[in-house]
Length: 380
Image 1: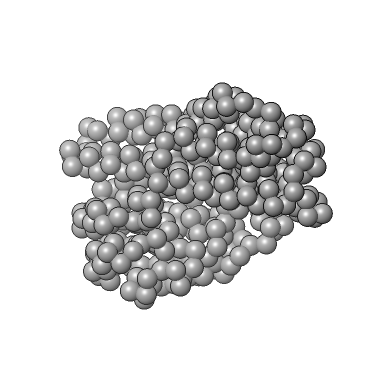
Image 2: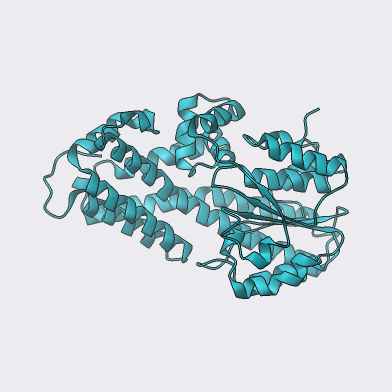
């Protein structure tokens, strides 16, 4: 019989563990899901949350499960670091305060904390007592890249669940099957989403996101010949496109509040507003980072061709564009360009103006790849 755990792609042992825990009523008060990016940790946390609040034990199809999947259930909170360097103490204290409140709709509350490896000692100290002895109706799920990256005081209070690295070909097959697309399109989605299977499935199923990818690649095309105004204009256009999904999220937030305003108290409404604000901020960062991810995946393909490893190219649909660029640059220049992408991702995390970040990225890519005195050959 199908359930929410079917969506945990590429992790059969995790599926088995979580199902048996639910069946045997052995749910831990705190979990640490650790594994590399793209290993379905977020999907597993969502499935476990669905199983804990769904009246049918996590059927994956009812309205309750749908609300959890959309991050709209009032008793399931998804948290991400609000500070540039990780979780800030004020954010953790807000979570601790919220944990003490009773559930609004379900019998349990679930908190999913992404990147728990970015919780410093001060934030961890504010969280320890709650993590060790949360209310009986609360389950905490922490996500991290590695167990070693999480402070020992945090890791020791959780049931650690390891997630394996999924090989690229297997990941592409999983995305292709889940989204009903070709393996080639699946690889494109994985490249654009930093290897995340869950995000790649959503990405390749969305014509709008695929069009966004095409616009990012188009912004890179002819970058060598672009003047300063061209570069700034391309950056502005990409930022506008990156914000389009946020309008949909914002509209969903407003509709959700309208639907529930009549039976929620002021304190509950305020909590939902704050959570919506955090989610909108996280979605904004995700959209902007995707610009860097797409540019980075293109540059890695260029590097693969420069290194005479064309079989490693992920963006097969723009292979001719990749090959043209590879003819005009060398490996050292591409590596410098990839460093510029990493710097852009860091700047976005520090809440630098999005247009400034993307403009700086395009200028730095032009400089890194071609230099100020490079020949004006057609590339990108």
